[in-house]
Structure formats: C-alpha cells, structure tokens
Amino acid sequence: MLLHTIAEVREQVKEWKKQGLTVGLVPTMGALHNGHKSLIEKSVAKCDKTVVSVFVNPIQFCPGEDLDKYPRTLDEDTKLCDTIGADIVFAPSPAEMYPDAQMLSNDFLTYVIPPFFYVNKLCGKSRVGHFDGVCTVVNKLFNIVQPDFAFFGEKDRQQLIILKKMVKDLNIPVDIIPCPIVREESGLALSSRNKYLSANGKKEALVLSKILNNIKICYNKGIKDINALKETAYSMLNENHSLEYLEFRDKNNLEEKETADSDTIVFIALRVEDVRLIDNIEL
Ligand code: PAF
Image (cartoon, rainbow, N blue to C red; front, side):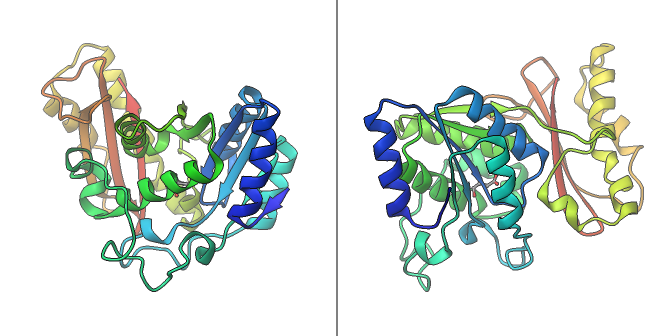
C-alpha cells in the first residue's frame, strides 16, 4: 500500500497497534537495491507489519551535494517492497514532512543535534550538518510510525552508531537492528550512488573493499600497528582514487584507536569519478 500522508500512516498503524501487532520501520531514500532488500526482508521476518519509508530528505544534503540528481525510482521501489511483503510504502512529499519549506534552517526548524564528539569526524567532517538532518528526519519518522523495531545498514556505520546514541539519549522506545553490508560478488558494497559510476569507475571502486580486506588479513596475521596497516592501503591507491579518510575507530563510540584490536572498525571514504564512496570493516 503506497501512502503519501502522515495522517494515513498514523491511522493504519493505530489499527495494527490495537490488534497488538509489532511494527518494523525501514527508513530509506529510495533507489532501492539489494542492500535495502535485505533490510526489508529482515523486518518482514521479524515484525508482524513493515513500513518502508522512501523520502529523499533535503535537510541531510549539504550545499553542493547531489540532492537534485539523487535517483528517484518510486514505481520500481514500490514494486520491490510489494514483492518482499512490506505492508506500507510511505513516500511523503517534502512539503508533507517540512510544511514550512522556506524555513529549513535551524533558525526556524526544530532539529535533533547529535553529540559533537560523534559528528566531528569521518563523514561528519566533510558533510557538516548531515547528521543533524539524518537524526531529525529519523526522529520524525519514529514519531510518525512509532515502530517497535527499525532497521539500518552497517554500510552507513557512523550513521548507525549516531542513531543508536540518539535513541539511548532521548529514550526513544524503538529497538535499532543493525544489518550487515550487502556486496556485489566483486566485493563492492551496494549503494544507491554506485549508479553514478561508469563501468570503469565501478572497477576502480573495488579498491575500497580490497583495502579493507587486505587490512583485515594483515591484522589477522598479527599486525596491530595502525600506521603499518595504513601503509598497506596507501600502496593500493592510484591516480583515479582520491582518498578522503582511512581511520581506525572504536565500534561503540567512534574514539580513535591507538592500536588495532577486536573493538576496531576501519572506515574508508574515497572519491572515484567524483563520486563519494564509503565502506567499513570490523576487525
Ligand atoms: O541511510 C539513509 O538512506 C538515510 O540517511 C536515512 C536513514 C533514510 C535518513 O534519511
């Protein structure tokens, strides 16, 4: 069932809650791929009812980012959700989510601001304000759908850690379910932004997963020194790769690691053909 308004979703969810049914929410920006499919499948398996939201959230895009050209494929997305067994696709317009369209800055709109320590690093460093937009829209979706469970991919690991922190700090009654990264056979992590890459760009993009796998192999062989592990990565880069960061951070609070251990996540972001790609691996 495709719904566009908050009121319709609320009414339907109220009915389900009356019947004592559990509700799962899969928040997305559409352009659904097999990564999203696995999140929706998990929700359908775990919950009585599943809502998939499809909303390209303007307030999480920074100036100069791809808000206007972000792929929008609602017909295909709705079909996929139906096939998997989702009960509602909630696809609101920007005006439905933000009625005061001229007033999206935090001078006028109430924002949920995640802690500086979690956002002043990794993607938050170059995408200033991005996680404010994510936390605000996810909080709105939680208030609209009131899900028991919400499903997020580990590909956006910083986002996942920040959202878990938001739920804990604000006592939001929802269980966040992390879902493993889905990869192409080649190793490339699935992302809606892969659509921007040429065939050659996709080949060059394999360097992200190759670097991460190589670091993990070296770590398993006993190399714990982070500089030594980073060196193995730098030698794999060429002029088609523009590295933004390669960092070793604690899996719970994103603190920088001094030596690699089993609580470490290695995060990478780099540009290929000017497309910004991210990936991560747990050691
Ligand atoms: O991960 C995404 O696709 C988005 O950041 C989310 C969680 C749907 C919020 O717009």
